[in-house]
Length: 251
Image (cartoon, rainbow, N blue to C red; front, side, top):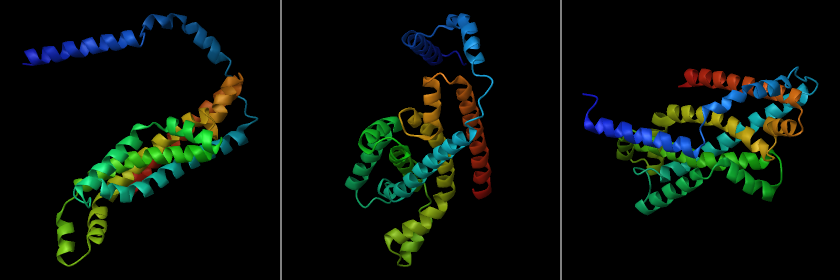
């Protein structure tokens, strides 16, 4: 039965964690009683100010470029590292452990932390944001691809080695065709995530539509804020549909 003792204990523990989380986060639905204040605030967002639309589109393209370049560079660098982080392709156990720890370290640092560090050394603009996205993606792609490599069918590898192929050639031509569809799928997903990350990095001076949104909000240009938000929503939705279309066509 579903009400076994173990299930009851699990439910109780879950409820305790929910209660503690609500206390720590000051979760209180009664705060929505001042919902009228939000309506009054949002009313200042309209009508939208279309006078700066060309500049906003330029910033949007900059955001897309940041996300795409950071994702592509992260994938390109992570691919060879992934073979060192996979148990079945690593040259030695020591190198495998070192690579895994390195990827975990890079992956554990959020892009915004990389961004804050790089912005202080490289200055404001999209370039530090690209590098921040790239660093984090190296850690993420490295882990995901290494797991795909470990799950690859060893048969083609053994066949290529049996005919005298070098190890790296056997790995490249026997494993990559098996995992490439999944690698592409992960790339498109990370590209979508990188777009949202680019918006956040814009808040700290990384450029793009995120920085414009932050500046407009900070200077109380709410008619411009509404257009910024609309452009961001349209961009994310279009990229989501485009990524799904490309993924279905290629994979």
